[in-house]
Image 1 (cartoon, rainbow, N blue to C red):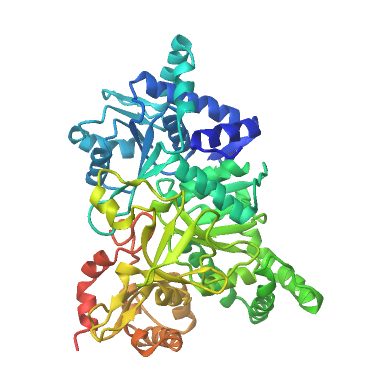
Image 2 (cartoon, rainbow, N blue to C red):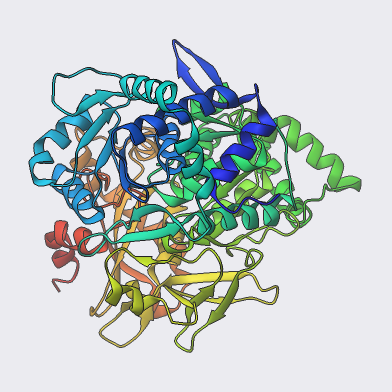
Length: 602
């Protein structure tokens, strides 16, 4: 039976998996499983513990943590106890956490460890509704109304023994599709973040429709494994890397950190994996660097294999295998090159899912040629999130695929993408005016993105409506596609286009420092520091040549006329990226104002 709520989805997953592993976490150098039945027991204890502490029906409980099995347990414990959770990025500052806790009216909060707890201690006095804090890693404190996760579960166990399971079962069983499941706060690229109200039905319907699109109706395979590393605070990982995996019969293994993802992929051997383009960009850069630094023969073999893969791509894109002479060549290319690339993902990967930001077409085509399929999709927090996704029967790099079942799409006169379906949010929490700005009375949601549908009804995104650059000459320039082309350059890590109300387009470029330093060593470029290297005439000429190659495919008004090389990466810590690694253009413009002014000085 198709689940109508996430409570139903979880209990169905437990019923099917029983003693099979539902989650895996690394401890003592190896991955350890948690069975479905074990997880259910922990979830029930957490839920009953929350009820024993006075959690009201439809109350709010915050979760402030990186990905771990306890995150899922806190989430499932909260929602099966009849409440909604509020996800908080662990990278946020105390004052940002304070805003979200107060705006959401959360009365209880799970925190990952002492580091996160110290942030909360700093602002707790300002959070008038916050009553209890639970520490997931079981670090003990003497603070009032603070307890470890184990202590909370012990309270739940004692409550069950005294009162029985009736109250918990009543709460879990009474959840309906229209009930609030979660508040997810938007990244807040401008102003304070808004709490997006997503219901059980929003997420449950999106899981079902996305699963049907990609793997078929009622697909179930108890052997699927997903490696989870994108923040669970974000709706993409919450839906596609967590709830959907439970629905499909899979097991979720948690990466130790973003830095250990390559190692964890080899250890876990995932069959499915969700990521943002940054992972694929870094993988592509490392692969190209290894290829170009190899011997002459190895280099020839690598690029021969890629050319064979490109010839086979139209067949691979339709989930087929090349035959005849091309098939023979592809088998050789696979043995010599592609199999080694696939081993780095664990060797069992069926496909990657990409979302959260635009994926460069060149990178998608490269991975397709190597038979590492990336299914790029599109959506927003407000749409739970998937609106469209590429499917195995036809992968079209440069597009984000067709609409998932039960989803309608139309393009407004100004090019904005509008959508309508059971996945569209209830609205912004306590923000009726802002809700009305994006959500029409008949259910059509304004995405704020610009795009069009191609001949196959695959959606092509050209840019964010608010991020279009309008030059002083009145020309509209969509920065994202050009930035993706720049990031496909081996020596480029990040790129941000500049030019709004300016005479021409320029770019801030963050080099791939590792690749650039290797190039400098090969070409006899002497330097004593990164700033000195970036001012070297040969280096500037290198980037100029590479950017000119990108310019050849652009209209004159889109071409990058000038650029500057930045000495440091844009990061979360500098405030230039959101927690989902999107560029905060306003902050970038402010932080690099002097460099930008120099570009337009003449």
